[in-house]
Length: 567
Image (tube, rainbow, N blue to C red; front, side):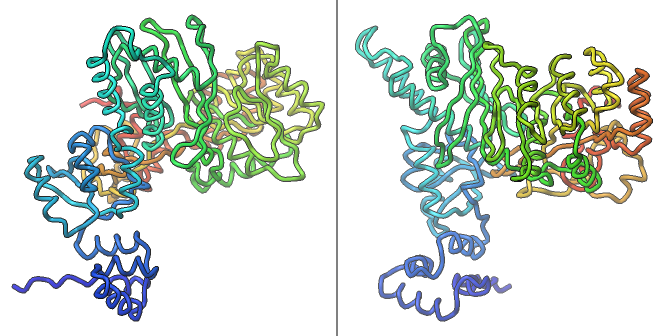
């Protein structure tokens, strides 16, 4: 049987519309004159860019193309290949898939390097292709011997072992190795799309964890003797008092990482084995999400848009810590931010800065509380007010009074679902008639991981017990196709990349207002809200499963329904 003839590189690029045939002919002449390959000639003449040529080469040799701006090499995989080989041959390991080790290379014809790696690693290899410039940039930033976190720790340990005497070159927060180590931890976390960095002292080690898409991933540990200098370095960068180790501290760091200016909110907390430090990574693009990108279904989206455009009243977003409440409110006020509207916020702390919005920072140490800011902002004649969180009766009453005097008020409340907000406010001490008359709507939400688009595949046999616990009826799943993520380099092997919200939006009507006024039980309020058309969190999650956005397993994890699964 005749072997299939491989397409020429020029033919592929012409077919894609990247270059004309005359351009290919010109590049061929240049390649012959300068002893170059056709791809190199096209790039040299400016007829095609490096990424287009690399993609075409991947197609020509039936290889996967890897964009290193989007794909993250899992740190544990890097140790499969020594740093010197990574730098010399421009190769990167991407983890194991289907009993093969995925390897990123820059030259599909470099068979010598592939043979060397097969012999050295004793793995079957699955080569993938990336451009040389992105490969070099990635290696320069994250794989350089002086930029490799684990290598840096190793060098510090070597230096201590080979050091002269006990007091010479002692590690402290200002020493170059500690500075590099801390910078690398931050850079690696940003590259992995983490939302938080956790530095946690333990009995005999310091654990480093990154929270990616809401799930903590453990990084390699830092030796216990480096605990003090590392934590002090974070505190110095954040402007937290080094001398105070018995009380919690808060600070901020602003630094450039991979060409982007990123803010970090830093919190230190005394614990049994030393101070624990957490950095919240505040990316500027996170606050500029459009309302549609939050994950609303069409009906909830239309309802949300209608509610936030009302002239007055209170709109509450509820959910536990880390459920995306602030992001939803930011999306709302960003939508409403116009030159003809005055918007004032009271936040603790101010996480993102918005042009055209007056943002006030709570400072309880000098008496600048939520309630104090609210009372003062009413004299500023705002149209829209955002209160970071309703924590007590005083704040709740001032916010409600603001709503009753013609202002639109946005705020958050810690409850498990939307109907619970009504009973929670009354339990705080707010008079039922004020709750009934001022609240316009309450939205409960959670964040759910979405399936990675690069490795999305059909999920042939989801666990029927999980489907039963989630409330799927047999007729709902008959003939339906479920999806999951296989796990790839783009998602770090998890099968998920990014998160969206699941929502329940309860709009107040006459019946619910009467029930609030009469202090009706929570289950009665919930039943009435459902009868009025409110879709619960679980129902919204089921819709996203059927639409191929997420998996049944993820919804069970988020709703904590795993305990209900029985044989």
